[in-house]
Amino acid sequence: MISIDAKNVEYAQHLLGAAPKQIELAAVNAINRTITKIKTQTSKSIRKNYLVSAKNIKGTLNIKRASRSKLRGVLASQGSPLLLTAFRVRNNKRGPVKVQVRKQSGAKAVPGLFLGVSRKGYAGAMQRAQRKARYPLRIPYGPSVPQMFGTENVIGELTTLAEATLNERFLHEVEYRFSKMK
Image (cartoon, rainbow, N blue to C red):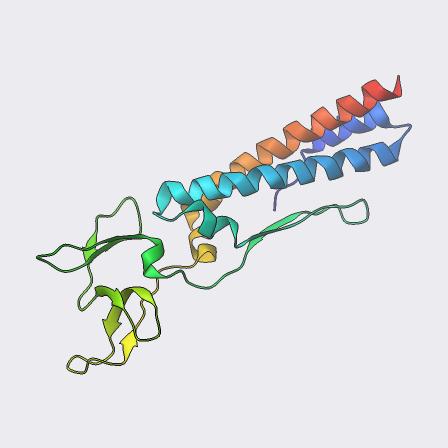
């Protein structure tokens, strides 16, 4: 959980002690601005580690904004595993199909994987469910966005950024409201 530094709260009470509602409004605005910044940074941070498009990431991120009655903002990710074709798939004519999910690791051959079009119209990577039979076909999946969002690399990077941004925005909002009171 990320919170506003106690020194910053004391500073806000010193400046805006006569108007406590303004302190709450400053906190609400700081929280909401921080969440929107962290949402964009989440997409960048995930794409720094994984080979996935921003469209796939941003569609799963949800924001719950703060209000005066609830001084809490939430950024959550909810979604199912992504198709393997959402990542990098290489089809070599003379070898197996290779898939790369993470940027740090190389492309790996997946046994039995091929690119094609199924009877139902799906075009992409598929595997046979049984070795000898042509059908049924199985569609392989990679990790979900919430799994990628929950890795230590991504969370660690975002936590430090969120803490710094929240305190910076809170001080800015307090000083802005103090200048309006004069």
